[in-house]
Length: 216
Image: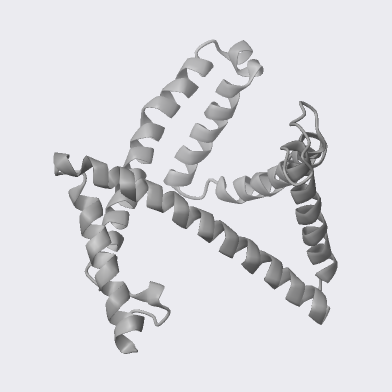
């Protein structure tokens, strides 16, 4: 039992991880990489089904127990069911209807999801403004540099900046292309090295949290 729960998953993770690494360095293993890509899509499909079941099960428990905010969980079921029905109807599923240019699914996306996304991001703008106000307090030299760069960037991105000085848009573009890109690449390098380290920990069995029992 311990072999099936612990040892076998570690062996599978090691073998699959090493094959995935070798496909990038051994040219003759190109077909193996394509096979793995096909398997990965199959795993994605099962993971999607598992995630759907987990989501619906979570909200069903909230509805059954009448937890605070359970009314929102009913909207999850309503939206999921309506979207599923419209998707099958528009794509010739169980209802055997031809795909329409302006079917119910596209109407729901255009007039329900898009306005909801716009509303969410418009509300998010107030939180960003509040966070920017707290961040841009010029209490230290670094905060002063951040404040000046942010002001110049905002002025360079709007039409009024060109009226104030014709060089502001060019300077804003330089900030994005040189200093910002350098910081972005540094962050990406750190994230990549962290991903490599985590992958090696999983391949060699050091990281075992995916087994459900922590690192032990």
